[in-house]
Image (cartoon, rainbow, N blue to C red; front, side, top):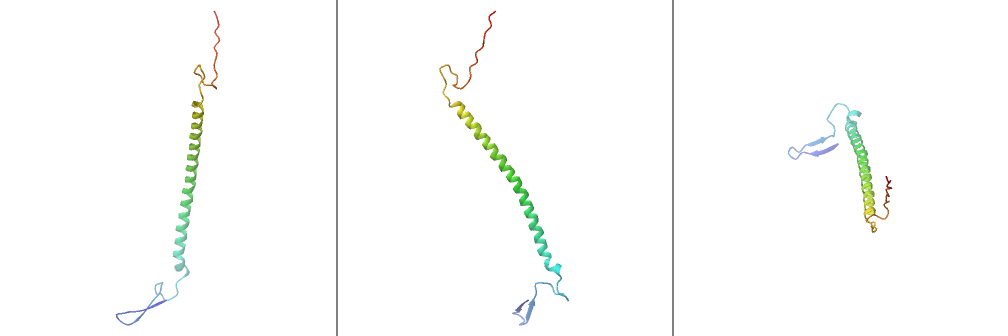
Length: 103
């Protein structure tokens, strides 16, 4: 309970954090705000965790795509970095000899 003195009337004024009633405030009156805050906190945590699941899934998909693009890049670099032989074929490419049948 806080006690303050009124400047105008020179009287003491007492203030309480609860409205004046004939009896003490009930347990539900005191904890009503706490319960509301706990529900709001639980809702916020649920929404945040759900968002985190989607964010992790998206990050994993992006990481996989980047890995696939890096692999493709290395395949293309290795493919076109090999020197050609005198016939214009790449050294590792198989040459196919077609057999002609004489008739």
